[in-house]
Every structure is written in structure tokens, then in C-alpha cells.
Image (tube, rainbow over all chains, first blue to last red; front, side, top):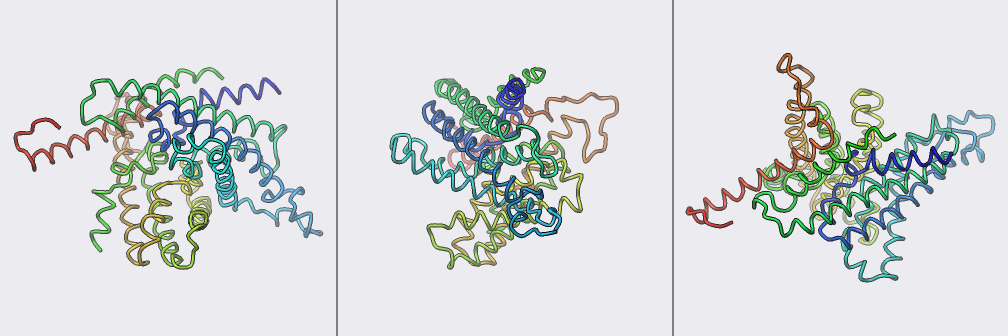
Length: 218
Length: 205
């Protein structure tokens, strides 16, 4: 079990890094990677939201949406009916995005109270975690990978948590690496046309190539 | 009205100028077919979410407008998901995760917030259509470049026989490289044009 979890973690941090291999969360990756401090803050906020979202969406999918005998609606009103009559899995996208929006609101309130400096640094990107596709992406992937026809595979709750946490760490890793490179880049002599976003993408290409080297790891 | 349509395609192209909607752009542009499919799906959602948001703009309280917009968008995305699953299972399989992720495409929420919530329904629909076409166009450009250079095909047809293409172009690094160089090219063209208009001597930048 531990080995399995470790493989999931390494897989999602290095081999299938959310940013560099799956193209999830590119807007903050290009937008907030100008300095190291806000990159780290953003990364930690995303780790928290992703882990929480993985846990909450697992519960919601298992008890409310999946067409199984554990479905709460089935338990309440399903006398003598097949559980598949209570298949609400098509509401997955809507339900998950609402959960994430609520979680982000929570994180925003906590950060505003505890660290106004971090709040100012993260600026508009904090509410934008809601539309960070990496967060919705990891919750949808969790369901795709760890559920089969509505039934969870063995240990799927823990695996979802690890995958959510790992995806956040992978995102933070890519973001922090990028921010440190870009801090040095400010002093470099770059052709004027490539300044800003273009050079950031070219660096991302090189980093992504480096991460391709992890492919054989698992 | 026509200007509302064309601005989304050229001066304010969502991908190349505003840098929005990058995730699906890079992930899906491995081939022209995928690019057009994704573009069409996003355009559909964009047009209808703009319409509904614009119709509801006086009813929705300011404080909870973003969640409301997200629910509207998610509804249309679910519709697209179900239609793709039923009628185009191949396309659905190759777009994979990025179909539900249309919900969090920043172009759609961005247009709902910046345009549809302040304008009449008809103009909003035109704006959505323009932005959608601009997005599709950008995807198609990237898809064409990457498919030709990465798998030596166009729309699945082989181009040059006995030629082994640069695999890296359809892998993730190729996507980043292509969009980086394209953005650089556009910046170069823009600065050339500005220089040509203001000071023909073309000194400095």
C-alpha cells in the first residue's frame, strides 16, 4: 500500500507533472511566476485547495452521485428500484466546480485574516484558483482513475488524497522553478520581441523536456 | 456589430493577445482534428453562456455573480459532454479530461464577466461567436504546425513518404516551444508595424 501510494505521488509530481506534462494550470504558471515569494504562496494555496477538494469530491461522488447501493438518494427513496436509477454522475462537473469555488472562498478568508501581505502578493490570482484547471482536473482524474463504474477501487480515498496533494506539490515545484529562472532572466539580454511571455514559454519547453527524462521512473 | 465579431479574431485574439485559455490550447493542439473539435465545443459553450448571462444580467445580485456564471457555464459544458459521449466517442476520447475542463476555460468566464454581464443579448452572442472563432483559429494554427512537424500528417493524411518527423513537437515540449516562438513572432510583427508607422528610421524599441 505504502509503495503504491509512493508511486502515485512520484508519478504525479515528476512523471506526469500537472503543468509540464499535462498542461494544467498554465495561466497562474505564466502569470504568477515573476517572483519567488508569490510563486511559493500561490503554490501552497493550491496544494491546500487540491488536497481538500480531492477529499470532498470523493465523498460527494461516492455518496451523492455514483449509481451504487451507497448512494444516499437510493437509501432514502430507492425501495425496490435498481440503484442505476439514481445515476447522477453527469452532474459531476457542476458539483465539483461548486465545491472548489466554496473551498477557494474559505482559503481566501483565512489568508486575508492571517497574512495580509500574502493576500496582497497573490492579488487577483487567489480567486482565480477557482478557474485553475489543475484543481478541477485533479478531482476529475481522481474519479476517472480510482472509480470503476461508480464503485471505488481498494484504498481509493487515500489514493485520491495522495494524488491531490502530489499534484499540488508538482504544481508548486514547476512554479517555483520557473519563478527562480525568471528572476535571473530579468538581467539577461533577450531579444525584445521575446521578452515576457514568449521567453517564459520557451523556458517551459526546456523544463518540460527535462521532465520527460523522468518518464521511465515508474 | 461586425467589429464586435472581428475583434475577437484579431486585435483581441483570446489566445495570442490576451493569453487566456492556454491549457486546452496547448494540450489539444497535437492534431488539426482535435483542435477544431475543441474549438467548436468551446465556441458553443461561449455563445450560449454569453446569451444566458446577458439575459440574466439584471437579475443576478452582484455579490454572487461569479458562482452564478460558473453554474451557467457548467450546464452547457455538461450538455457538450453528453453530446460528445453519445455521438462522437472518438473525439471525446482524444480530448479526454479537457472536455469537462471547458468549465474553467478562462476565456468563457472572462467574457461572461467582462462583456456579457454589461451588454445586450444580441451583442453578447456576437462577441461570444467572435471570441470562439478566434480561439478555434489559434488552436488550428498551433494544431497545423504541430501535426505537420510532429507526425508528418495533416488531418490524418501522410504528407511526405518515408520521412521521420520530429516526435518532440507532439510531446509537451513542442507545444510550449511552438506557442513561445509564435508569440515572439507576433510581438516582432507588432513592433515592426508600430515602428513603421511612427518613426521610419526604426531606432530603439
